Figure (cartoon, helix red, strand yellow):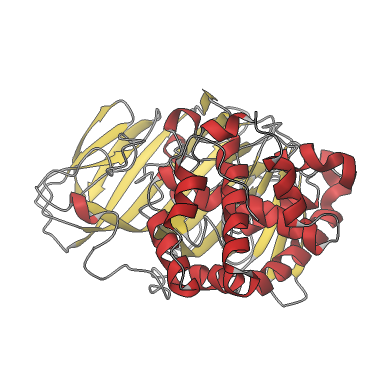
Length: 493
């Protein structure tokens, strides 16, 4: 995905294994943090909203949803989060999570109340700009009532103290369990599509990206892993160790993680100088060096294909929780209970460009994440001399009975979000486009797409418009056939 939600044996490999003979898989107290980093290039914070949140900028009550028809209860209206500071402790013995979330946001209209997404857990206190605020709970909504009206354009700070036993979301179609998953020695945290609310109050939708600071305390001897880079060395006091991580680039809430437990860690830099952090559970210690080497090599290669690596570090984590999937947590993809082969690492790292840096505006456009990362697997196989992208395309196309032909990937369904069509037919859309406009324009398009929408959000309509602009061709019929029609498109020459 964004997070990659599919079995550990990829659909590409399932069809190509006979020829390739390989299997690819998908996918103590510390000082207060520094001031929130300034907006990075491409980040729209600090300007008048004209993007995905603008439609909800009216009234005095923040809406209980961000306006995504596929997930009407996800996210919230009335404000734009700029930064999260999560100060949390977790004890794997008691499974208890406790701490606070400080949320710095900008009001998109006058507010007398607003909502945050939070599932379960007990809220002990809420303040807004230091003043005690009223609050109420209904379902997965935490409604906050500040002591005074917040005016449009005001920056404000919400502090939520909370605790409890996190419960992941279970039995989700074609995914299973996600969110905050307690494990024998810690936690496995993968939040796509809307599992961030299982462990911190948030505007839990990819349309509202923010920067993050994490201060995570665990029993001494355990490791806490989050997004971005470590700030200083971990500090141990009275048998507990606190790890401070900072992700200074905007990030969707479903990409945030606080994976904890016993890990063996290897750090360094890629050949191109990108810092790298890899960690594996003890059961996978024999995979640490290969995870490190493949992650470094693939990160550098994708920077030549997709444009400069968008973040300040790369990496990967293998935990011993058997999730059956991998997720592209920003800067640190996580692999749930298996040692990933090269193809799945290529998929998850491609997501750092497609899904993490350039994020979707609405979940219906998930093919912009998964189709692109799946096509990256084909490009990686092509680069390695295993099979061409065209060979893989033709093998999929040769099966007219494949159920994906009845599922148009350009309108991903909330009840079947991670359908094979979103991945494979999404990838096939890109290959059909490549054949139509030629390699030179196609690869120029990928780099321009990742540059123009770097750290932001985008839509299918924007991608189609850019493809037409660069190619000088009318491409509406091609995209309509491959993305929106419930049938197999005509053969591609």
